[in-house]
Amino acid sequence: MVWLLWAVVHLHLMTQSKLRIVFFGTPDFAAFSLEKIVKSGFHVVGVVTAIDKPAGRGQKIAESAVKRKANELGLKILQPANLKSEDFMNELESLNPNLGVVIAFRMLPEKVWSFPTLGTINLHGSLLPQYRGAAPIHHAIINGETTTGLTTFFLKHEIDTGDIIAKTELAIGENETVGELHDRMMIEGADLIAHTLDLISDGNYQTTPQDFSEELKSAPKLNRDFAELDLQLSLNDFHNKVRGLNPFPGAWIKSEWGDMKILSGEKMELSLPNLRNCIVIESRQLVICLHDGCYKVNQMQLPSKPKMTSVEFINGLK
Image 1 (tube, one colour):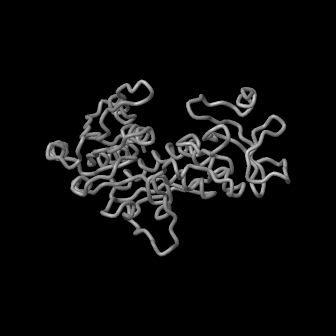
Image 2 (cartoon, one colour):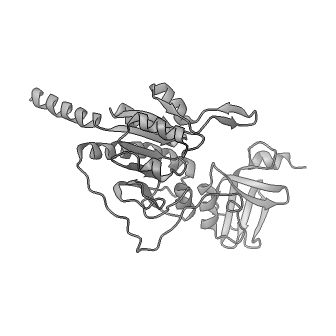
Image 3 (cartoon, helix red, strand yellow):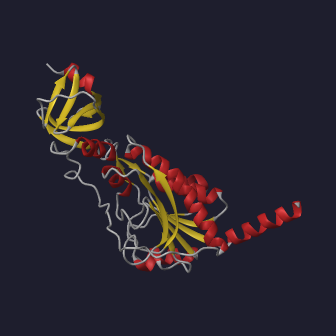
């Protein structure tokens, strides 16, 4: 029995070693998966991440989360300014990868993602084909979805359209923020990537083409205009937009005190029937009155001011 167990483990390690992975990623979401891949026994021959750049108020040069993790794991790091350059392609060729893994990285040129002989896989933060695009976690919450998930798939020319390898589904809490969901998906995503690599290393998988016949919801990149809150929104839509943009980039609304970021809040049971489509201070609470209910602001921020609770804000008013 012990011998049989040893043989199974040995065979699994041998199949894992057949993969020579080049990893592409930048933020914490990707760094968490990188660590899971290495600790699961897979061979990462190189890590491609963003170049170091100034960040924060002091504009100090900062490394990406993936670079910090790769250094911690003792992996070879590549930081090309141009993914199409001959120098980068020569470096990539010298690594001799047979599989690419992309998580939260910029768009790859076809000659890069098609270079590994087994192809390149991507981890996407939705149940594809729904929410293709740059901000799937945000848009799922903003649209009031109660479930979401993660998908691994092989890259092809059209973005987020490749054949699916594996999926996992997650419930979204009624008051869950994008930050909270992101952190849960980061953990689940690392597990899904490790599972996907097991399938590929064993050769025991079948891909499924994406079905584009249903009505598709998109997840375009976020910008300041999109993050503006509208007093014409329903209470549910207002609440979903605030939590879908918390903590980043933050929903905001025009007010008599300036453009106000609404960082967190909650739907109120209190009704103010004579007030509609306005922002008021009521019972020492900052309240946004909509056509079908009221929203209590818990934390907010004004331009060039620190984050503060609504009580702190009210106390500071003359």
